[in-house]
Length: 63
Image (cartoon, rainbow, N blue to C red; front, side, top):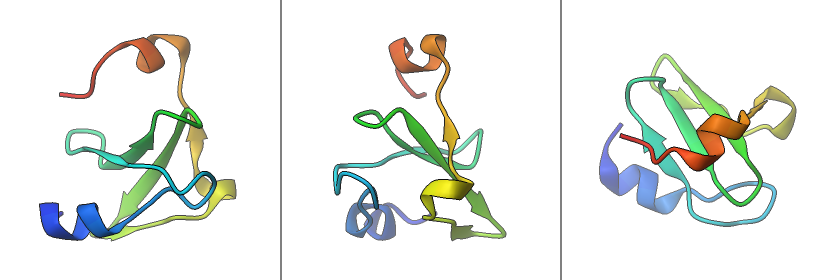
C-alpha cells in the first residue's frame, strides 16, 4: 500500500493512527489491539473482520 493512502486511514473504532505491517498485509491499531486485513490491496476496515493482537504482538514493534 502507498504510505500516503495509509496516512489518510484511521482506526474505525478509536479513530487512532494505524501502522502498516507489509509482511502480514494488515493495518494495526495499537490502541485497540486490532489488526485489520488488507485483501487484494483493499483494507477491510470492519471491526468484525479484524483480529485481536496477541500479547507478544502488542509488545513487539512492527517491522
